[in-house]
Amino acid sequence: MNLKRSLILPAAGEPDFGRGSIFFVGTATVLIRYAGFTILTDPNFLHAGDHVHLGYGLVSRRKTNPAVEIEDLPPLDFVLLSHLHGDHFDRVAERKLNRRTPIVSTRHAARYLWNRGFEKAQSLDTWESLDIVKGDAALRLTAMPGTHAPGALAKALPPVMGSMLEFAGPDGEVRLRMYISGDTLVHDRLREIPHRYPEIDLALLHLGGTRVLGILVTMDAEQGVEAMRIIGPRAAIPIHYNDYTAFKSPLEDFKRAVEKAGLADRVHYLRHGDTYEFQVAGAG
Amino acid sequence: MDFNPEEASRYLDGVEYPAGKAEIASAAEGNNAPEVLVERIKTLGRNEFSSEEEVVAELRASPRST
Image (tube, rainbow over all chains, first blue to last red; front, side):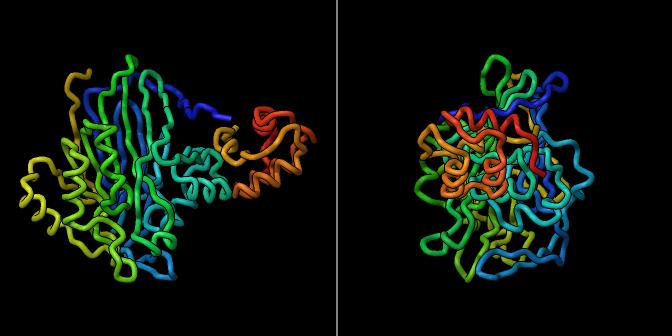
């Protein structure tokens, strides 16, 4: 059976297609607000000093605090989760997120979430889409390929997905296309993304150069720049860059690599608690 | 109701209908379905289903187990 995958949210006022914002909470946690949608990504609300498990019994210590507490978030339309890792979905999120809030993630994560009472959890396989409708605004959410680790280590880490968010108005025309990398390395299947999506307005890149057992499992400075070259977004924001002891590639390295690559005009830097506000031309 | 039938249908592959609920639950288990879904199928009010659509409809209509 092939049910059309869709999610209908209650309408709430006139959607504003002209402007939106990205609020950076920390790690890969951002609050995306556009076209009437409020979307939370990879909820990580642990505090400095707390530990998370990254597989193989390895733990990493958080060095930062979230910019807001989970209780202080505005009402969420849904949560977008790239994968089930303690620095992306933690015990605070598991305890405090409203179980009626839909969470979209991998099959691996959705199964876990469902068993813990998040019965609105939905999974997407790579390239599969979910159409989310809220009043006059529509969002097509599609899972992008991601690879957390090379070779054998990949089996020890959870499956991960990137995301493409295409926001459209009532006419169906896409107003904003946003890519979120998820915890991925640069890999061959990333190259298919620009073939399918030649125009990407904004990319959120999970960097940090995370190392597990000495092996790189998230993009470092050089890979971040390479990902920008492959994906070709008009603008990019690095996230997931300084929150845990396992994050080994400082943001300064990425800044230098970006400048060297001549991409400085495309990258916006957010500290925890910063908001990136954007305008969408030709939409009103 | 919170239940998400689209997600449930992922775990119902490989069932030959008509099928009993024990058979469907066991297929879901084999497809690595969440335990709560397997339990839910086992406690459905009907014993026999002639299609996946019927299973999903019954799941949708049945009260939450928790």
